[in-house]
Image (cartoon, rainbow, N blue to C red; front, side):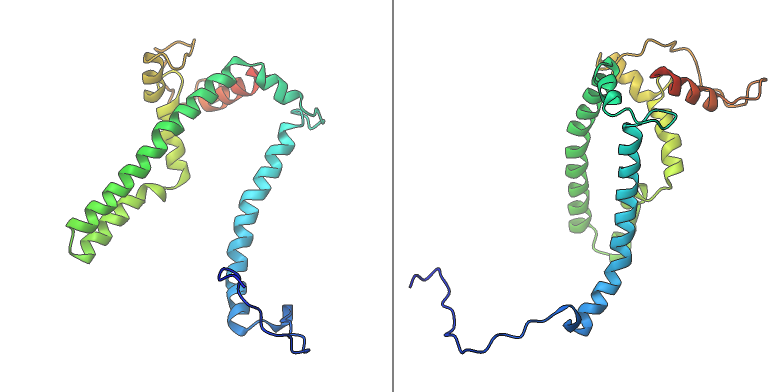
Length: 196
């Protein structure tokens, strides 16, 4: 027999005892009990928004089923391809640079900083932007990506990667207008009606 194939023991006539679902060890049952809430939360956090997004993509604003009409409408819109190109460019530049810079920072701290307390502080400070509340990240992202006054859109438009036909001199409104509607409400309404 070949060396690569393991030799099976000679049959003894006795069937091996199969360990069923109820015959797990105490440690295995504890591990499943510990993992179940975390896996359940991850499942809920990922699956429910995915199902809602798919349902919203095949229905109209009033909830009537339209099938793939929304997809054909999006594929016919030139802004879709601009967004796709900007997203691809962003992923092509940002992801490798984040991985490289993060690895370089970790190796630098690991090799140069000998005191464990200072090393832990530097690691916490490096991870802190990952755990900043999403609201603060959303506000900063809105300031960066805003079509009229966002820094990143200004740079991308200057490089000729994206275009925005709006007025660049407009600044964000920080107070409610006399009519009572805030600029965020009116801009959301404008965005909602732009594709309808």
